[in-house]
Image (cartoon, rainbow, N blue to C red):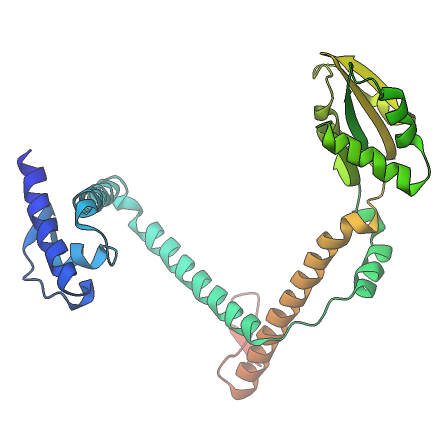
Amino acid sequence: MRRFSEIAIVVLLLACAGACGSWSGFRADDELVARVGTSYLYRSELAASMPSGIAAKDSVGYAQALIDKWIIGQLKQQEAEKLFSQSEADIDRLVEEYRRSLLMHKLDQHYLEAESYPEITDKDIASYYNSHKGDFRISQPMVKGEIFTIASDYRRREQLLKLHNSKREKEREDFVEICRKNNFTLLQFTEWVPFADYITNLPLLRTSRHNEMLESRKLHQILYDKTYYYYRITDVLKSGDTMPLDMAKEYIRQILINRHRADVVHRHEKQILNSAMSSGHAKIYNQTDNGKRETEN
C-alpha cells in the first residue's frame, strides 16, 4: 500500500506538470522512483515515457505499469547475465551480427525508397503466368456456384424456382428481389472459393465426405428445419489443377514486385563492390595451399 501511495504521489506531480505544459518541457529534479540493485529509475525518465496529454485519472495506472515493466526488465537482464555470463562472447557476436543486419536492411530500404517502381501491366502478369504455369497449382478444391433458401411454407415456391431457372434477365432480377423481400438467403459465388467454405453454408454433417458434390452441375435441394436449401456448383477446380490467371494475378504481381526489389538491391551491391575494388578501398587476395598470400588483385 505504501509503494502504491509513493507512486501515486510521483504520478500526480507528473500530471500537474503535464497540465502546465508538455512532458518535454517539464524540468524534473530527478527524484528516485525505483531501484533494482545498482540500477535506478528517476522521475524524469518516467515522465519521458508517459504519453502526452494523458488524463490525471489514468496516470497512476499507466505509471505503475511502466515502473513494473522497468523493474521486470532489469531483473530479467540481471538473471540472464548470471546464467549466460560464460556465453558473453557469443551474445556479443549475435548482437553485432544483428546490428550489421539491421544497418544493411536500412541501407537496402534507403535505395528501394529512392527507386521508382515500374508499372506492372496485365501483359506482364500474363507473360509470367504463361511461362510458369507449373508453379501455380490448386492445393484444395475450389468452386463457383450459388446457394439459396426458400421457406417450406412459402406458397409460391415453384413459381420462384421457375424465375430462378429462367434465362431471361428480367425474371432473374425478379427472383433476386423476391428473395430479398422474404429474407431468403441468396449466396452467389462468382469468384473462386474453397469448397470447404462453400459447404459450410449447407446443413451437412461436417464429418462426412462430400466430394461427390463436385461432379454434378445440377440444382440440388435439401429440406432441413422447415427450410429448403438449394445449391448448384457451376465450376470446379480440383487439387493439383492449374490455378486460373485471375486467381494467380495478385500472387504474380507480388512476385514481380519482389523481383524488382531484388534487382535494385543487387544493382547497388554491384556498384559499391566495383567502386571499392577500383579505388583500392577493397582488395581480394589469392592464397596458396599453405595459407600464404600469393598475389594481390
